[in-house]
Image (cartoon, rainbow, N blue to C red; front, top):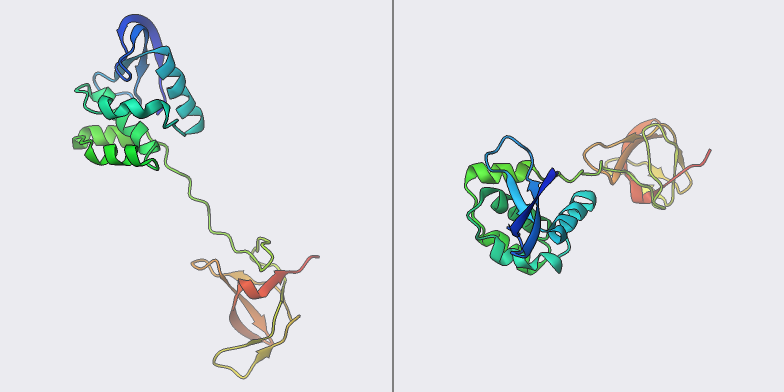
Length: 192
């Protein structure tokens, strides 16, 4: 939702409809015709906060309920982005469902949103310590190994573990020469 601000106009804000001195806010990414919106200083300040923090103030943006019906493509795109950021609030989620954008405008609107960075899966032991491939762990309780007569006693040390990539609750390790899968909730990382 990056912007470019320039100029100084005297008309009506295309977002909140406040009359007065206005600035031009460019709805990025550029390459779209008519990608400029005339905004008041208050809306510009709030838009800049959204850009910095990626969070919108629901109390301020409640006027989007009326703004979403604008015929100006840049206003529609900007309104969709703001409603999307506010979608945890019921009024915004309801309005987002009502707001229709054709496929070109929707593509433009989505192109300007930052995708949330998904955290990489983390394996943690029973105490919350992060586990890594090659770590040494200790069993925190005795475990019967399924499909075997092996009983792994509490306090057993397992060296050079391997993390199960598709399940953060499991690791692989060898006990008495046998490779087994162990739940991380029954382990604690051994400190060197």
